[in-house]
Image 1 (cartoon, rainbow, N blue to C red):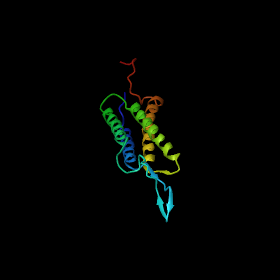
Image 2: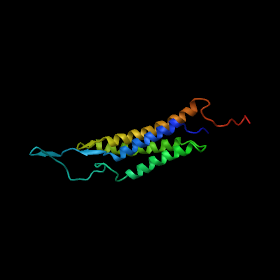
Image 3: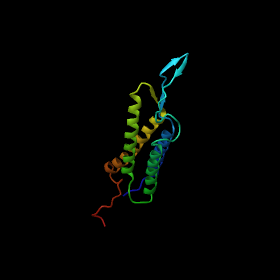
Image 4: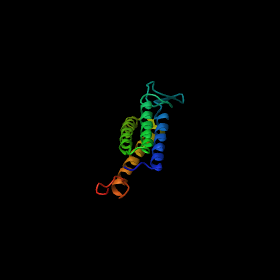
Length: 152
């Protein structure tokens, strides 16, 4: 099988960096529940994703994107393709961040912040990179370097 190109690995690293930045940035901001004497009043509830930094599922997401980059880099020196790993990780990121976005978006007192959008973009990039490489090998003849069993 063909090895991943430098552009493939670079795009994977860019998607991972976007994912790590998205995890580090806040995902949501509370909107004021009301105003008293011209000052906003906020609820006292804790909402996951309010602060900048790493909390909750953030370390698991970082381990996931770093593992995918590791698989893509190691595939340059092995004979296997990391496309399925990228698609799987991207789908997982899309499901987790999509559900979180839906939960925050459906409540009027929360405003979605850029970190969640970056995490969605990272998952989408992983899926597009992996699926694009799979389709490229299937559609364009000669890009899949699988040896022809008839030729020896």
